[in-house]
Image (cartoon, rainbow, N blue to C red; front, side, top):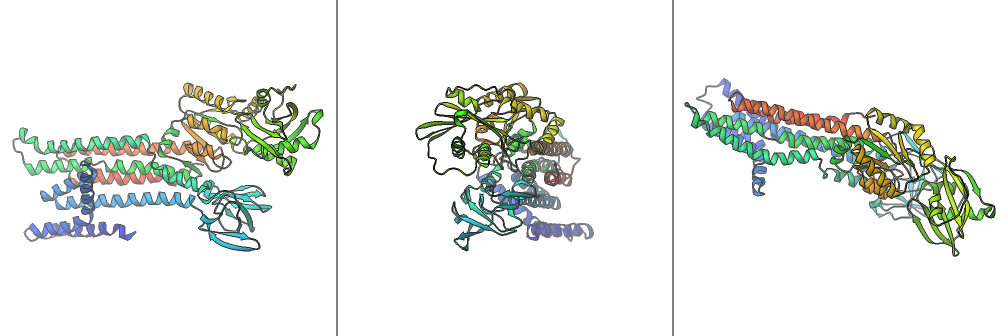
Length: 619
């Protein structure tokens, strides 16, 4: 850290000694070339890097940069003999730059430490022996042995009967997460208790953690509207103040009787130093970066600072049911088969076909039926969005899905589903209705807290789902969600969200399934549940919630609102101080020291305000 401050420390010491010589020794001793050389020695370590950047900017065609303003103001101060003030401007500017660099580095380190938890090496089982290899060289199908305290390097399937993991790197939650055999485990999780074995299911570069890290690293490239406005504003504002400074220096010659060039030049230089927009240009991006860092620390990933702004303006949160407000962990409640199908064969066929799906219902059926019969050969397997699955078994058609699937393929059935509040899985075989299974899901522990907090923030809530209307209404009533719609196909969800946007304004949609990707894409802010969520939805979403907890939805909105508040505090504070000192400077009532505070002092205070969000708690 000392090496970053070394030029500023040297300049500060030499400047203070120079001020001492100015004060305690006669002016005829410490003047002329000696005084100029002394302060020049203080100026060069902090001033040369700025002048170098100004020269580079000019070569690129950007004449009116903040570096150009600082350069002409301080060189002008030297030209009229105001050496200490010229040094002070560059000195405090360089200190501000160091603090800014430290703040950005800290924010980046926080994000990287939280997310890039992948170990460089993994232990792979080869027969009865183990071999340590680079994590990037592990292949899909390899068996990784994970000792207590070790981090998992790749996504995989747990082969051990039970294991407990710390998922803080992914979710921000440090409490143990117990997994059972067959469960999905992700890169970055830390094994806690016993030696565990994991089968690699995803390549190193395609792991969920790798994609998340890439998203966060790219997030700063997506600029918020406020940030873009300030940068455009600075490009227009800077040349204007340069011309105003020239006017302040020269125009009074036409109107003032006792015109002194050096006095009016000094006023113009003060005006230039004050007008430098570096405080805004530095602190606003840093404010958004701090918001992204604070969200990442809590297991919420923003793909760009523009989505912090968008989420702060949300009027309505539209959410899916399964996997968002409910656990997405289903259990078969009952099986009702037609008389002609009362045997295990039909359930084995259903189990085999559902194994081709990633939907949580498939796991529930497997848990109920048992292991998949390897003798069943499925052909022409097709997933019909919003309906279910279709396949051919020995030339006979097999359909498994909702009752819309039965209607689509003109399968006759006589069943009143009105009073059933469970999810129904209908079955048809050889063109005949074979029966149905009822499957129940449980509401997430923090779902009610989520609804209550959104209501306290005056944000509307709507639940949309492809599940039965009865089931959706039951869950919505239990959580006091005012608006709910069920039996929706993906395209119908899209239409509903468009209607809600037209009525309410800005809308965020929260979902987790493949079917949710289209509606996530058309919402103002798409939020994906990153644990159980499908890859397509996570890729499409603007915000990813790592641990699937809906309570992170209002937390994300709070972070967006607080970030925007801090950014506008910085804008208001910087402009307010600058306008006041600009007027005083033009009137000759402000010195270069006041200009230093108005520029660099304001920048420092704005930076400190911007990084404050990283220490806030949003629980």
